[in-house]
Every structure is written in C-alpha cells, then in structure tokens.
Image (cartoon, rainbow, N blue to C red):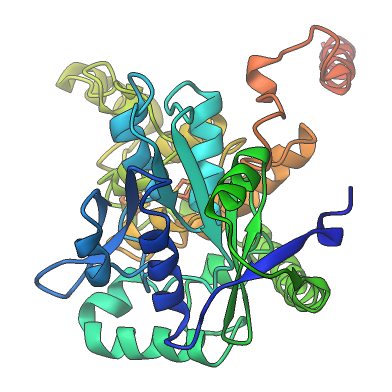
Length: 382
Ligand code: SF4
Ligand code: SF4
C-alpha cells in the first residue's frame, strides 16, 4: 500500500510543536509505562536522555532537542541489551537514532519487544560546539527553525544538511510536522494498535505534507551529491587520506560517540594495538620514520571496514572530534559507497538482513573476477 494513502491524526498544536508532543505522551499515560526523551541538563548547556514514569516531569522535557549529545540508540541499548524492557517504553528519537536502533537490534544489542519507537520530522541538529559556546543563542536559533518551518538551514550540522532520511523512518509512531501543525501517523501495526487504543478523534490527509517532504528531500539529495563529490576529492587515495587525518590526535572520541561501534573490546584499545618500544623502533627502522601516535590511518580505515555498512550519518563523530576533522561527512560518504555495493540501506528496515550476517558464497563474484585478473597480471609480470 502507498504510505500516503494513509491518514494521520492532527494533534492540538496551539501551544507549539514541542507542547503538542508533550501532551500526546501525557494523554498516553495509560498506554505507555514510561517515555524516553531528551531533557535539558540543570546547567542548561546540554541535554541528557531521561526515562520518565511520572508524567509530571514531562513539562521539563524537550521532545525535539536542538542538539544530540548522545545517540538515542545508545541510551536504548543501556536498558535493553540484556533482554526486553518489561515495561512498555515509548522512545522518542530523531530518524537517524531510530535507524541506529534498527541496526543495533539486528546486531543483538537492542531488544525492541517492549519498546515503541517514536520519531518526528527532523529539521537537523545544531553542531555541539556551536551550542555549547552559546546555549541560549542555540535555543533561540533552533526554536526559530521549528517555528518558521525551516528545513534547509545552514545552521545545522553538515551531515544534517545532506540528510534525505529525515522523515518517517522504521518507527511505530511518527510525528509529522506541517507548517506548525503536528500530525501523528501510525507507521507499524504496533503503532496502529496504540492509536486505536487512544481513540483520538479526526483524520488528517497527508498529501500536502508528503509533497513538501519530497521537495525537501530533493534539495537535500542535490546537496548530498555535491558534498559527496567534494568529500571524495578530499580523501580519495592514500596521500589525501593521510593529509585529511594528519591533525588527528588519536583520541578515539569519534569511535566512543558512534552508536554503531558497539564492540565491548575494540582492537584499537587493546594491549595488542599498543606495541612496545621494540616494535615501534623496528617499524621506524623499516619505514625510515614514524608519526606518533602510530596507526591513525589504520584506526580510521579499520573503523570504516567494521561499521560503514551500518553508518546512519548521525554526525556524532564530528561533534566529538576536538580537531574539527569532518569525520561524519567522510564516514557518511564511505558508508554510502559500502551500502550501495551491498544494495543495503542502514537502518531502513528491520526486515532487511545485515549483509555481513547473511553472507552467501556466490556473493561478490565481481571481486572473484578482479582477483583472478590481478593474479593473471602478476603471472604475466613475472
Ligand atoms: S560513523 Fe559517525 S555518522 Fe556514522 S553512525 Fe558513527 S557517529 Fe554516526
Ligand atoms: S575524534 Fe578526531 S582526533 Fe579523535 S581519533 Fe577521531 S578523528 Fe582523530
């Protein structure tokens, strides 16, 4: 069925978008045992994830936060990695966070049995450093975007400007935003059951909303094409990659912030990856010289090989980088290439198997052909 033969239910948005979403969760008190959503920290310079049972706290929550300090999928993982939540929890997250949650579910890191994924049309998130340097200005800037229906702002993170998956991810319920109105859409059977139980009045036609989403998508796709061409030019080939990462201080913040880097013990943080002086001296003698800390390119290419199939372009790696390397744009570009090669889109659907988990022996026949050509060439050269 075409999604947009579906209808939504318009929520009371007289007091603004944020309040309409808060009220929805207030009204759904008997449906959900708890709600997970962002709340501004007491120091007012960042946001944290909170899980609320007492709806009194909802008034202090900001459903659509201006920044994304921790990917919501990581928060969800904290309480469902070892089993179902047991209480029915509604988790309200950005579309890229929902996509990360879908990937982590496939990797057995999240259990969605008792979770109702709720998403919204995302205008993007502000870069962390911009927000932290002037939180009140950040709040005002973001509220202006929401109030004025601005979907292609230059103020949001670079990866958000090229994100074409900002609406209707694989969630159960979705808050569509159309010129200040909030319309709730059931996006799965689970979601449809919930709206049925809530018995909300009215039906809202989604054609105009869908048309405007498609228009925004087209603009984002054009921006993405341009950005990817620039990124490719910046990193293609070892020399350029080396140059791009030459200022990397090897802090591994990008890895810690990434929702997809879920390994308990990462090789790059292991004892094996920290060679003793003999090994370092031997490498220096072999190569004639070394940059320290060592193996920065190996770290980044290793990470690309491990997780680019599941990169959801959330931008947290760039937010975490202290030396302003555009890590997210690079990983987003590499991720798109890897995902295209496997005809896979990270986080799009729970039903699409992760290619690495569904390996078939006849896959990558092109690689076989490339290898046999290379072998033939080697023999000819001998
Ligand atoms: S690599 Fe960066 S953009 Fe991609 S999922 Fe990880 S943190 Fe997000
Ligand atoms: S966060 Fe930046 S500096 Fe730190 S390891 Fe990643 S790319 Fe290098």
